[in-house]
Length: 234
Length: 372
Image (cartoon, rainbow over all chains, first blue to last red; front, side, top):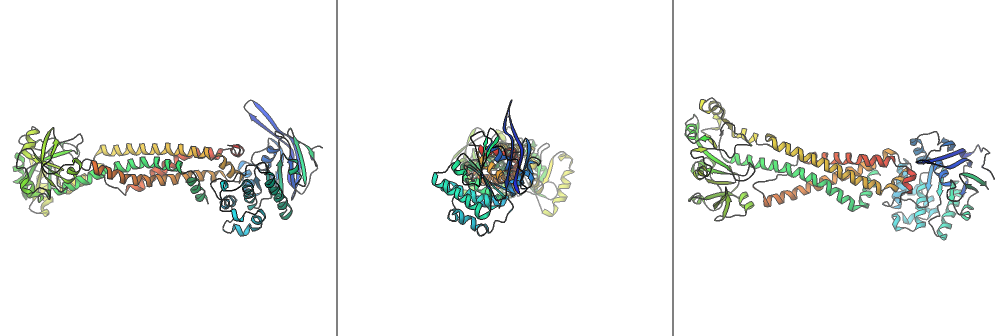
């Protein structure tokens, strides 16, 4: 299969001819070589591919962590290739949230303060966040763990807190980078079920990167990448 | 929330925080100790000048508050000349000699009966009035001197390369910390028939201005320094001794430089240690201003902590100096300088945090998130 080239007018993410070249000294590495992709609002999309396939680079560009070298990447109406660093920061603050393989919770803060930090940065009210986020906290089953620091929680619990933090700001898109990569099979299954529930119950748009084809099957659609290109779109 | 993040960062690495705060506290303590010693010395000098009980001080030409303590250029006959001036009821000349390396480490030779009449006499802690200068080689010391030298009445103390017997220990606050009989000090100083300065007592304080004016116009006293006690006391300030002002400024400079380097190193380490955390904050959408303010707030808190530690340490240095060098290094606690040292600590902390802050702000979020 070739890259998706059919334009979807309802797409919350639209990628056209995306290229990314990393210049490391005298060597240039072409990480993305013309990627086209549409992600409609409310879709749970899995991106799979081996190491070096470009899936993480795609993830970083869609998340506004790095600009593209060329091409068009429109996320929630913002072309991340045409805006400056401050606008990409605003995109991360308002429209996109991340869940990482290594959880990436702030180690010196409790689960509650990790979530509050995200709310504060996003400029949201923090006083009654628990009542406002009750659905999410219940769904994630972490109401009783809010006073724990990351080193006092299991990997599964940390990932749930990371998901709660990501969802607290009400992002249009949730980007999950190998969210089960550091979890055992039971916790992996729980997190994947959780993501699917979030997608089904809240209509949350999710873009998930994974090595694991079984995990990818939890999404509506799976995109395969290799050598900086989308090679299959199921 | 920023302050909470800062507080948790500080709490999370207590050893680094403690070391940084201590390292900022040390120069703060140095500044406060030095300022305290200069003020303490001046306060002590003022108290002792007032304790003489004189209305007018007559200094020989070229003598100032901070020099000439060891010289005795005035002919002793000037005492008799001065007592004959209008409104002057008492006059006594004293000889001062340097007993140590610093200008304030001096002993004073007095004519005890005349000095007693003018000052009201000593308040005896050990010994009595009849014990003063009964025999050659006797010294009267005040309590500050006695505590510093750990001597009591009947003990021996080495001054001017000879041993003196302590005839009495008296309350501090009158002219000097150590007194010997004037003729003996004149002999040792090779200044027979000369004195270092003369103190005058008037018939009434109301005649002070008139007497001062009259004395300044006496041809024989041309070029002499003629001051009221209040003028002498007013001259007794750290600013009146140029070397003290320069010394304080040098120490402040060292304090600022040390604080700057310490905070910069500390914050540089903190930024390195928290590379991943900065990446996380950036992934959450934290702005450059937010990241910079975190670093600067943390530096400010360390500056505040360092100031508090420095103030506490200055009390410790006062206790130590008071125990071992009470006479030569009296230290005052100068509260007026607390806001100044806080400003210095804060300024150097913020300046020192600027470069690490810039590094944090410029950090690439992807590289930061990959940092192990």
